[in-house]
Amino acid sequence: MSLIADFQTRVLPVKHKLYRFAFRLLGNGPEAEDVVQEVMIKIWNKRQEMHTYLNMEAWCMRLTKNLSLDRLRAQKRRKMDSLPEKFDIAATTASPERLTETRDTLKWVHEIIELLPDKQKIAIQLRDIEGYSYKEIAEIMEININQVKVNLFRARKRVKESLLQATSY
Amino acid sequence: MTHKEIHSYLEAFWRGESTLEQEAALKSYFEEQDIPAAFKQDQPYFEYLLKEQARKLNNPAFDQKLIKHIGGGTKRLMWTNFVKMAAGLSLLIAVGWWYQHSDTHPEAAITELQHLRQHTVDADSQAAYELAREALLMLSKGISQDSTQLQQLEHLKQEIKDFDPAKH
Image: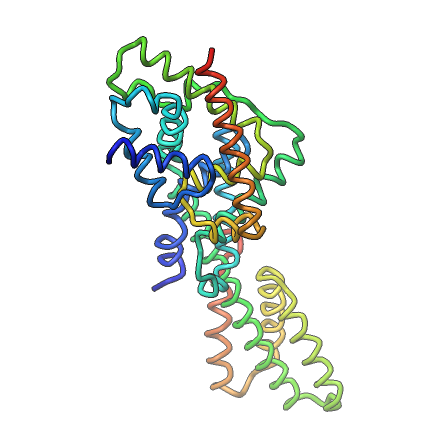
């Protein structure tokens, strides 16, 4: 198999996960897409090492995390984009009242997660959205499994507390 | 799934002790429209997770642009390597011929060969091309008898002439 074919088979299909991950950290679509492209080019430039990585996806995710955090640090900002264009609410079949309510609720959950520390935010993205194992998350985050569990527990606890507060009003 | 199972999975989830299978089961459960009141407070979070899972990089030109970028890089690299090899070969022939037919001291010829080889290795394709062209011009002026060498060199010269750096 040629290197380009190998790249198309093993690396390119991960682009959506990389995009979601970069988007979680950067909160901005075009910037997230730039990061994905940068990651892909970096991987291509190291194509001779591709066969040495057993978990290619984890390697891609780790690069995405590092590049996104680098950008965040450089820009010293965090965007809180408006949600209407991020969610395809119109594709659902619920009533208009329910749609408004859903959009508000989703926006609110999004904001709760946005306010979490980066490590907790990453833990939620990798476990609750992408469904990675603790071992894979530890590899991507470059921390040990116990630290992954602690970050995830704290993140979920914060979300749960917010949900309880909201329903108590 | 039963009400009891959902309750138990949710308890484990919020304690951070659920398995991937239990988490997948919860996500499927919350995709349903009618969620009992007991689990309503958990619903927004799972709805949010499902929406986020569906997010995609929606740029149809992304793959094509990327493949063009990396594919172009490969072609450039192959051409550069070819030019460097051709330049190196022609220099070796040129210096070999020069060594055999000139009155230069052998040590001076070896030094010159090392110098030229280093240039060839270090140079980029444009520099290698210029170096090879100069060597061939010099050599073709000097060669008048050896038809075999001349044929080989003419062939190499033609290949290098055909190379247009502006196109690569």
